[in-house]
Length: 132
Image (cartoon, rainbow, N blue to C red; front, side, top):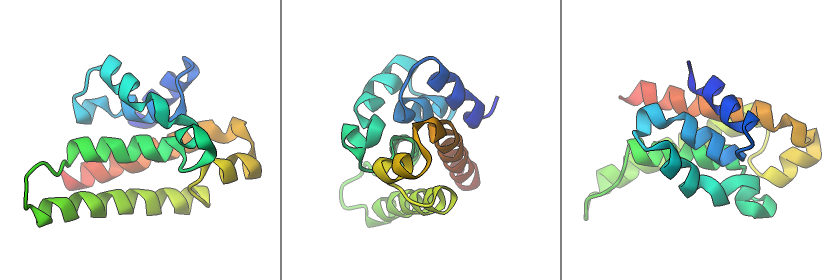
């Protein structure tokens, strides 16, 4: 099953956009499901404030786990992670039209979250596959 389908499965169980995307990418992050759901809880609904879409946040979190910057004085590692995060946000922006939860919901309604979750999970999975 691909990340898109897994993400919808999580969303259908009542998890928010960030949780759905981040947990769906567990095959790549190797995080335990409970940990993934816990750490991403507060990112849904645009950090519960209508800001950056939770699905995008979940995707970027997964990229950070898969391609971490963990060493001191490692500008190459830091730059790689930053470029992948930027690529993810830009690809999601192209697919969704904007990146804030507030704008997305105002434009398309909350029922469109399913599409955004699918798109962001697919974008992150694609970036992971392209770079591993």
